[in-house]
Length: 590
Image 1 (cartoon, rainbow, N blue to C red):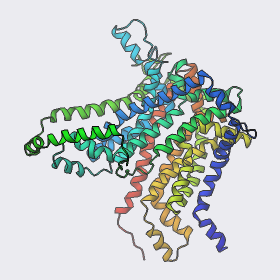
Image 2: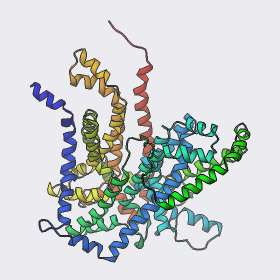
Image 3: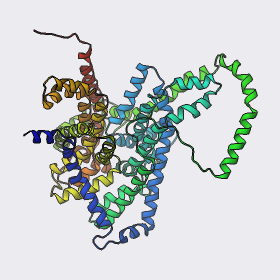
């Protein structure tokens, strides 16, 4: 009995359920896909040579890399100054700004994509305003082109760039900048030589995360782009959906996966939010770089005298750029926040239109499309299916993910990092690869076209989110509290329930919330696994967006846009209730 109890308490036993689900649904099918791609047991590279031998495939592959790289660069150029301004703002302003960034991050990507269709379409907001003003007589082609794809993808990925940067920048000691300035460094020099190197881990993590996720984008390019803007994920999904060659699909998926693995191997993904150590200079520099360094050093020495004379004057001199900084920074932040929130606001307003088509501003206000949603079984039935699946995914992933995070917190650091990266694989590689592997894994289990199959397909990603959030909570957990309870005779299970669980409850609820959001908004895996027999709300929305069947989708998108506000309130109440007892007086009873 004691041996069984020790086995249950072992860290690897707690991680085991998560690894079983991951291996059954994703790990083993991925290995099978690789074997299929090399024509096992004959083992040849015919599928890869066939893929690389077709000009259309090469074009789509390079187009995928180009779109992902440009979106990542734009997100970095916008996200870095935004994160800097947020991290240097006052405490209350910083909280408000982070919430405004988190709201679109929690909003359904499908709803955000639809909002840009409403804005950029021929009868959309921009064309309607330009025609009403008289600047144009016919609608301009603002949609179904590459620019629309860039706008939609940047809008979706920008919060994912800003949040890691803010997390890293909040940990930078700003007194180092003041020290650099006190020693004669200019503001730009202090920034580039001190602040930027300390924030490089956030730049690396945010850029890598955005680029890898962009590689697997499917919905946004298909909805906003034209025929010449297809990405490799669209090509793979179409092959799976319409009678396909398994070897060809496997090769295409592994080409995308290989790119991701190479990037992750070279740059790594710092999920801890910590800062990188100081960069080390290489032992061997090219001769040209050495010459340029000598010239730079010589010129710097020539300017030492002039800088030494100027420094005492500038040290105590009042800055004269206050007017510019006071207006430029708030203006920039306002533009970025409006870019993130305005599309959702437009959809919410247009959803109250009384006309047969959506208009902004509406000529008359009405609940017509909301009534249509709640009176049409195809809509509210699909919503109920999504809610039901989301609750099961939340229940499963919260339990399994919490146990895995708790077990990982008690293993050696080297094993912890390895196992953690394995558990987080479903959210660190392109979603189309995860979807294809899940499809074949669930096909092996006979679960295609069932709600159970969709639950398992969603659970592998949801477990990853729960592990990340709960592990972050456990990182700040004082294990001496558990040891104190054990020393006073409490059993391990009772110690976990009475001591550990209440202290990490906010992280568990936050992980559960993200698990539900992940499931409720999932489209790619669901479209492959459902087999057209299980219709979730995102699938119903995607069908209406592609075919422009019913403006009811605007009401659905507005409801999904308002949900993040509810999520924020739930998280706030959870954390507030968790912190409230800390300051409450003790109620000691005899």
